[in-house]
Image (tube, rainbow, N blue to C red; front, side, top):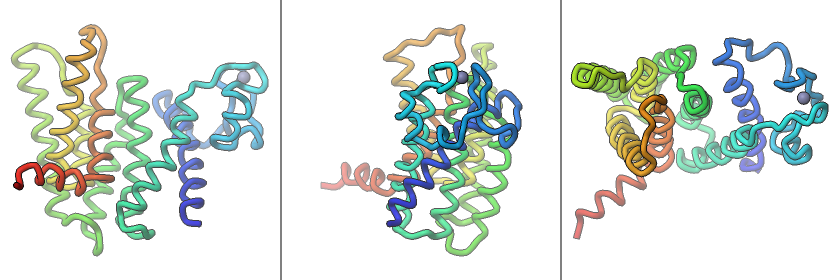
Length: 253
Ligand SMILES: [Zn+2]
């Protein structure tokens, strides 16, 4: 029953994230007007606005003009319930403060992931409140990290990313980490604490580096680093303990 609830909740949240992903970078209101087709502007009827199902029934097209709705919409609506279920299981299979804390983080993370992926920007309206929320909730009882860990995660992230950006600019004259990345990593640090921060920076950089080497990189294009940071943080939240144990077991005989 709870899993059914999480699927519905996740799909509904995912549907809302799609609105945010589209509208926040365009500085449009996320509440008014209601959903409409980006091509013909026709209002989407509630019956055609059911997460996942409507996309499949309409074969990813606007009922009015046939505009092909990006597959990303379906992906977000499918991925969110999966993440919610994994989170539920990894936070002790109950609706507890830690679960709710990371629902907030995963929600913001999903929105930032796709905005940065599509448009190479990380909106301050999401990342800055996250820093404040992350540090504030660490003072609550029965939360997963101490306020010292949250604060040091945030400060460490900020200092390391700022220094990296500065040093890179000094030696190459080019931008590497943008201000958006610095603020996002600070937010991540405040949520997952110092150990998670080190895990995320290490893991995200390694994956980004591998992709840059394998795929090559067009220097004229901006390379969004935010999605890697969010992926690393999600992995730490959902499977951090498991992965740390595997890593440590490699050194045990
Ligand atoms: Zn249309």
